[in-house]
Length: 430
Image: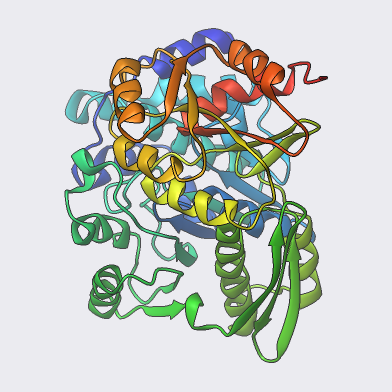
């Protein structure tokens, strides 16, 4: 098979449901020698902030360790979901491991059905990491947690991090915050170590109940004393009290990235304190300082000022608007795409506090919201709305942009992954 044929095969698995209790992926891995048991894993779940947290962890640990990262969705190609340090899996390895999976899939297919897309990619990451003898695997949960394909690690898990939990994927995870939190809490393992930055009492009760049932230790990063020195378009500076007060900074913009950074810092601090990993405090500071996560509050142009942010649900939009209050700009020009299963009316209501116009991009996904519905909702919140392709939207704002304005491109992560390359290759010159 060639790379294109492998991608076609993988994408044909979209919509194939997971098996109860992850039996299918567990049985497959068992049939090929249980490679997952040779990994040391940091598991990152939650609703928002997972990818940024993974990236912070990787950028600290890569100084002294070979670090494998598995994230989703991809920004450019499927290969950028699976990396060792900063290098994505090669096409050759991607194809070879895919062929190996396809050859062995028959061992589970008859009884449990075909692997779905996410199971296939999870298995690929595990086999690749084990083959390459990495030191640490940082695995991002795809959706939920309890039934997620990554939730197959037991004694291999060093620590779990549960980032901000909010209403998302309700048709799969439940229609209350407690039900969603319960699914996310499923990554807590027996006698495990968990760090969370959640503050919602309803969420915390669910996490604590799960931790107590499994005799796991739950640590709250929000309990750490902190002082935010600044948070603007140049990045953030903050103080954090660990053993003593320590100074940190990050190039990542947005106050919510401070929270993600603190979650990663606390997890690394605990791993070092418990002698599970050796992580120097100065290395933590340096890694956090230089970490950059594409597509999350990313400045893709300074003149004109263009920010790209995958705020794909209401909680993401809320955190985005909280950050906008710290940024200095005259007028906000908004380009947006939202998936059907999101709370798009609430998202538009929130962002309408900062602009009076929006251009929607229809990327023609099956899960994309109707542009007619979005326009109707936008108008109900006083927004003038149009529908354009990305390049046409940029051209439109290019004519209307004035010094001191901000062009914000936001919405679904699928929009970010597909639109980013077009945005970066566009001629922004005014």
